[in-house]
Image (cartoon, rainbow over all chains, first blue to last red; front, top):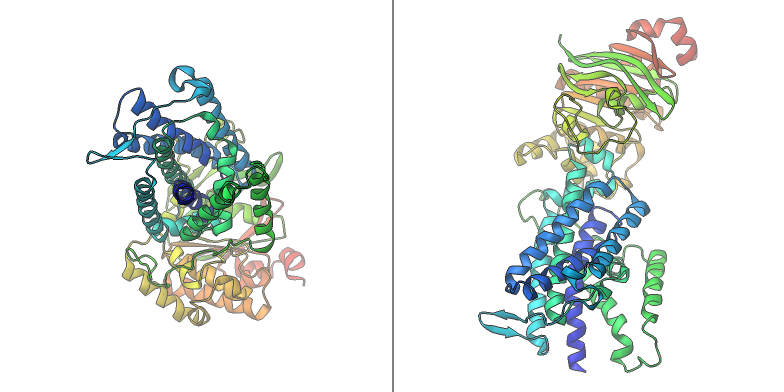
Length: 304
Length: 260
């Protein structure tokens, strides 16, 4: 039982990283993107391939995973940022599916649908962090979450974050204030992708195997759900959203009802959550974060 | 006086519909110049073209003699162009680059950042200003100039009235200390007394701060009274251009725009 709760908390951490990235893109810039599964997959496979095929240490694969995902974020960002709303959602959804299909079919590199097994465990200073002894891994993942939270929170409160919010509220007004909307939107995409790549990397060393079947469209939807449920534009809230969604999706196993409640049921539930939230509480459980006191906006680290 | 804004026979199309036909306008430094015309004459399109929000298919636009927009006719205008592709022989600048040169737009319908407070909106207006002390000073100036904004500085902009939002949009544009202020229908949807107030403010900004103003307005009487020179636009073409005082006496203008 305790083990199971730890498992939920580890997945909460991994998904919270993705949700933090999604929040920058959706909550701050207001872009409805559905690519997180794609970047997650790229990060996972980068770590898997580099560590299994080339024998790299995990800590060396991690920055590669982040940079590679960020690079694809840049590539997908440039052309799609001309699109808005549902068109952007469709285009980014397509990207996620392309990534999955390539992973599924590029046998030489990814071993196709079989995936890559026997990924070496992480070690820190010679100490192994075994995913079977969950406490160690839990702490590791949450260290990443806390660092990501602090960095993104800082970013959102900086001049860049203000520019992103202005773009969300009115792109034309923002650009006539001298804000290069395209550049900032692409940067948000790149940062969002990088953090999802890191999440993917962590997932690879947690499960110790990667298969294309994991990185479906549902992953992107789950991440979007976390942001909407917690509260767009609020990094604390999306971490809470990540926990709630993970809790809900493992609930049947947790209470031993997995025979009664089919696993597909959670998909129904996510849809329901999105609909109900949109009708009754579109701002999410916690709502948008109130900004620091006016007048201190551009001060460095100006948090109140 | 030197010429600040030079619009040289530009045209803009929306698909097959010509929104602007060979429009030429000159704005001298330190003047208030207005453009009047009916709804749909192409006034807002002209402002969008100046700030690079609409591509022009003929002619060119220059600010202080420096080209900021040139026609793309030679590249097959209207066809898809990759957004980032910029060659050295074209001088077309992006909207944010034009803002950086000192051109501030107060857009039609005000386009305030509704979820931000008045103060945050003004901060956004000063996005390109790097000096914190200067931003603070400029904000105080704005609060002195528009006392109602000072009183409402911590309020969300969406809670402001239309007139207050218009003043805030003007103040936001002034935060960057622009050389040229472009105003798109500052009187739109406002009560006559408030329109009068706003036009007085515009005159003061021009007189005391030396900001050149180019304003587009349906309220022809107000605009012509406030300005030095006026242009009249009909169906995307300039049909008249004279000193505003003369236009106020012009029979054609009187009949069509002043209801006399």
